[in-house]
Image (tube, rainbow, N blue to C red; front, side, top):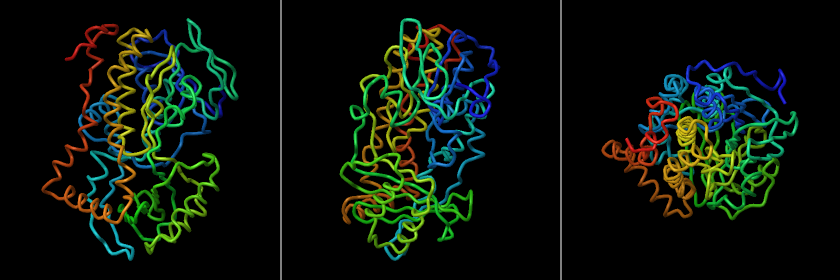
Length: 427
């Protein structure tokens, strides 16, 4: 399963805490949730393998933000708060424009960027760099089968040799392969919200510098931005309302055709440049705006983490939720001395309502980003103008942090490993 080209060898964990030293854990997914959990499990002494189907870490991606005290506390306890700040986007204002590109209103930076904003790819790299010496990473492979018995899980892979693990974690995203293998087809759990979103890079024809321009007409929105990393490149975001589409998630040409058809005739003067940029884009992201709703997060020795268990395509504070949930899952396993039944149950009890609350913030992401009528576009813009004003900035900040902060974080490090009862009493 491992080789020098696609994996990194695991070295003994450098922590003095070894309460999970008897556990051998497989984590499927090396984006954010998986490496975050790996960081904590390695600190507790577990042997951890992170499996990723891509041939290397995924770079770029959308910017993700963190907001509120719970997010800040977990980032600090992970030891990556300073590094995240060093790599933050420093994104500036976003401007809502008319069809002729006249400026309608500005949104201040804090409106979209939270306390700190970073590219998902940069965050993934930070987590990888922090864990690569203590965790085995295997790239370019994925799980083929999972067979559980009373003592562990036998795993076969698409390419590597079979192996046996004590626990398996599905941290492989909204369209989780692990979830499908253990819990059934995603159609049972994925709730489509009536919109699609796409993103890609193109030349920075507008000369943007850490700013964005946003144009909406009924049922569709185009956003063009530059985050300052490369002055010659711009990011394009497309959101449109739709019935649920039948398409191949791996067929980029088909997805591009869908986008060209859906945005044909858009009145904004810069729309043709965006669609022209789509033609040569080799980094297209395209997906439904959807959520995962599942009755339980674990089955036997397999547990779901992050978007695989409670994901939302956008607007659900998903990255912050993933980091918080990884902290809780590892902490509860350590508190239970590696007893997966007790640890998984405590993890789910701690995180379910919190994750649902964060997920709920995404319910209206599509209609807000691409309102269905001109009247609702104007209504949204009035809300932008009011909430973005200096007078109400503090109130808006509190509102956006409410779901992200709605959890009493346990400080697992203050309790002796295995003091499960005391950890699960409210402080």
